[in-house]
Length: 273
Ligand SMILES: [Zn+2]
Image 1 (tube, rainbow, N blue to C red):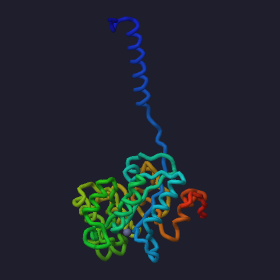
Image 2 (image 1 turned 180 degrees about the horizontal axis):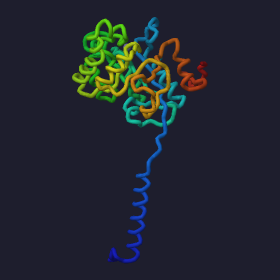
Image 3 (image 1 turned 180 degrees about the vertical axis):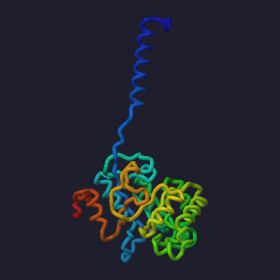
Image 4 (image 1 turned 90 degrees about the vertical axis):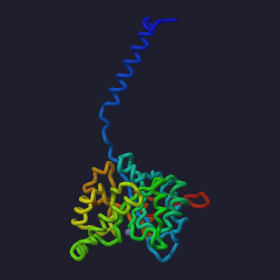
């Protein structure tokens, strides 16, 4: 049997040690942070009702997700965004506001099969109370399955200067109580807020910070930058509200050009801006 001390084995050992040292040195070298871009879309309900501007059928919603996928967008979750696990500039994050009952089906029929994890912005007052809303059990299941949860006020009141001046208690509850109830019911930390109806104010920003939220989303159009520290204000992060009237033009805007549409017959047509 050859000894480890034999010249040949020593050589192998030495080169392995040198290689390992070089690898360690390489791993320790600082990796330059490359800023990534994410487009955050807001959906609401999936009832298939003609007259509600922000409502889509399940099939329409699926078609929209497939169009984005077909056009080379990558779907990222809020957790990916918050932890900086995003690269490039063709990323989409789906958020769904309010907690309508149809979110459950939209997740299981459309999002989950496409491996899309949405951010659900919830106002707790309706959960388990209204027929049109999710139950706590459903919400717990969605959260356990990887959906991220944001507070969206408690009663969905507008946290603007008027509410602050007229009902300080209600203003406080929209920000503090929504967080506390979601944390108790879902047994998880809630660190992100979405302004009900996009109404915001300096007082709200200040209170959101005091309550311990890390970030807040508006409905102002714009590109979200990752790492999130690259955005000018962590409590004024941008999102695009998706409606029947605007989804094609918003998608074209995200793409910077015309989008390819997915047809049932497999042919592609162009969605004009
Ligand atoms: Zn809302």
